[in-house]
Figure (cartoon, one colour):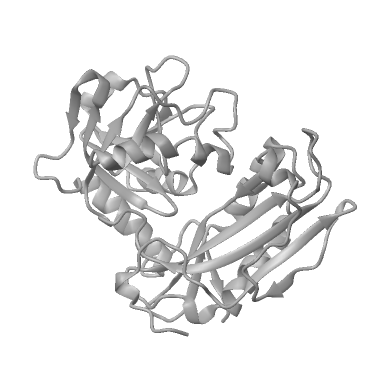
Length: 340
C-alpha cells in the first residue's frame, strides 16, 4: 500500500484491495463474491451501456476516536437503491445482502479507512447494472451488483466553506415524472454541460429550477438544497428531486434542536428572505452557500456578507459529523459499528 496523505485527499478514485459482487441470473442473486479485480467483463450490447439500466448509491464509513468504524445510515441506502431499481425496471437487491456486502467490503479494506480527525472518510459505492446482451429496448434479464470503496476528502475542494452557485435557466437536470427521484447515472450525465459552464464561471455548482415552470428551486447538481429563516429549516419538495439521506438526517436534527422543518415548494423569489442557504449530500455533507446568482436575470442573492457559513449550518454540520464519528450519542439509530 502506497503512503496516503489522509489530510490532502480529494474526492477521487483510490484503488483499494477488494470489491464485492453478486450476479442476478434466472431470477435469483448469487452468493457474494470477493475479488481484487477492478474490471467488469461485459458484452458490448449490455443494457447498461445502451439504455441506461444503471443505479448506484454512495455512503460513508468513519473511524472514531475510539478506533471503531461506523457506517452511516446503511439501511437507508439499501432501501433507496431498491427504490431506484424499481424505477427503471431492475430487480431489487435484497437489503440483508446489501448490508452484508457493505460490511464485508469494509472489513476487507479496513486499512483504507482514514484515521480520526484526518477530515477524510471511506466512501462506499454500490453499483447495480444491466448485463444482458440485447439491442431491443427492454429490461435486462441478467444483472451485476458490485460495491467498492476508496478513501476520500471533501467533495467540494473548499470543504466546509461557503461557496457561490449559479442558476442557468437554459438547462434542466430532470423532468417532472421522469427519473429525477432515482439515483441513476443519466441524471448526472444531464447535468454535465451546465456544470462545466458553472465551473468555468467560478461557481461550485448549478442550482436547478423546476423544469416545468422555472418558478421553484429544485436541487443542485450533486446535492439537495436547503435554506434557513426564522428558525426554520426549509428544503424543496418535488417529484424530480433525489431524496438525499443527508438532507433527511438534517431535517431530523433540525427538529431535535427545536427548529421548525418545512419540505415544500420554494419560489425563487423567496431566496431573498433566507438567512442561510446550503447544499447537502453524502459526498458534500453540508456545503454552505454565501451567494446565488440567477445568471440570466442578472440577479444575486447574498446569504453571508463575510463569506462564512451561518450559525445554524455550522451547528447542524457539527452535530451530524459528531454522530458519524461517534463523538456524540446516536439517538436516532443511524450508525452501524463494524466489528467489536
